[in-house]
Image (cartoon, rainbow, N blue to C red; front, side):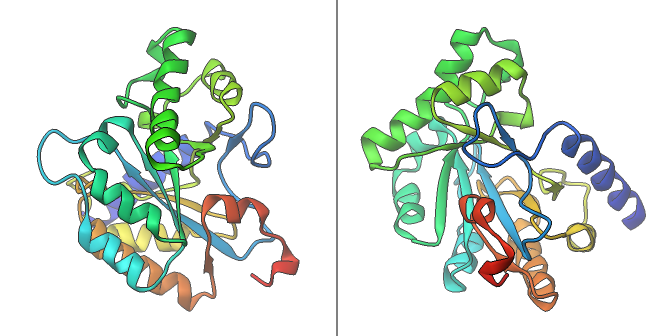
Length: 238
C-alpha cells in the first residue's frame, strides 16, 4: 500500500514536471517550475480551488503556517474569493504570505478559445486588484493544464504561469499521510516548488505539511514565497 502510493505520486510528479520550463520569473511568455539549483530553499504553494461543499478553508493548516511565520504562496480562484472574503483578507494580512491567482471559475483552459482563456485568467486578477488592492503577477493554471496560448495570454496580462516540481498528491484519498510525507520529503531539492491545497479538499494536508516542514528544516532548507525563490542566489545565504 505504502509503496504503491509512493509510486503513484512519483509518476505523477515526473509527468507534471516534464510539462514545464524553468525560466526567470517575469520573463516574457515564461513558465516557472522551480528555483535555482544553487538556492537552498523551497517554496510551499497552496491552491484555493472553489468547493461545492464544506468550509473551503483549511484553518488548522493556515494557523500552523501563521504561527511559524512560514513563507508560502497561495493561488486563489475568483470563485473561491467570492465566498471567502474574510479568509482571503486573513491571508493578505500576513507579510510572509504571497497571493497569486488560480483562474476565475477553475476552468479547463485548453478547451477554451484564446479570448475565453484571457477572461478566465483576468477575472481573479481584477478582483484581487480592485477589491483587495493586491497586484497579482503569479498565475497557476487550474488542474495544471495549459497550452502555449495560455502562456501567451497570461503574459499579455502581466502574469507568470507557475507550476511545480514536487506534487504532494493531497487530493487523492487513497494516499496515506505517511506516504505523502515520505515521498515529498525525499524529493525536496534546492529550489523545489511543492503543490498542496488549502481549500479543505486536500486529504491529510494539515498533518502532512508540519511533518514535511520539520524534515525540510532538519535538512537546512529555508522557505520562500515563489517571488522570493525566483530571486534566490548563493549570496543570499540560503
